[in-house]
Image (tube, rainbow, N blue to C red; front, side):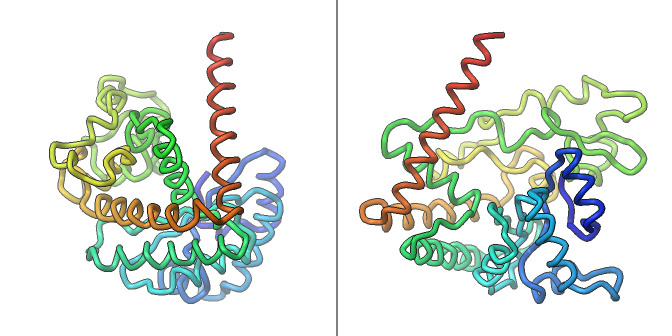
Length: 295
């Protein structure tokens, strides 16, 4: 479940805990950032109380992941990450706001700043729980050992493993398509899915989302393609890559290389982290294969 967290009071968190439901919370950082990005509709609600709600949800292991949306004018990215760590989050997803004007220099600065903070923290003995950064670092490590398998299934499971539901019960490929018009309507919770309309999404792969211009990109082997809903808003074409995605992934990969090359030879916490992450990934792959063979 994804939520902005405003309704995660103790009663609801306890119910979610009992139902074994986890929540990805859309929370962008400290009080100043949240006030700028997501001001409360109810002016009597305070961000101090909101932080207390989140802390309780994290302690109960209901809220495990913070999804941080970064806007072009956000210059305090490190302070926001530190704030989320102080609440107790064990996984932080950084995502640049989509369909707003971005400059390459701004994106480069954001990821350079984050990579400096990552290196500083690793040298101090801790690994930052930046989800995508750590996934890219593991991919980099696999590439270095000739064990990497590039993504093939596309950016996400829109229309495959996931659906978006509008307030009236209409079904779309994902929540981001619910405002994209009836062209992307797949059915309704009352009448089911129209499979002919869903079929194009079932056929989407990484190669579907890549174009000839992608062939010379330094981030190509890491790239699963870009979000189809963001593509649609950016260019009017669900399969043409959104420009922000390309700028962001290239900046992220460049700075992942910085982190890896800086730490891989003489930072024991970083080396241990990658070794354990690689072992865990191989074990999960083996268990998945054994499960398939036993069916």
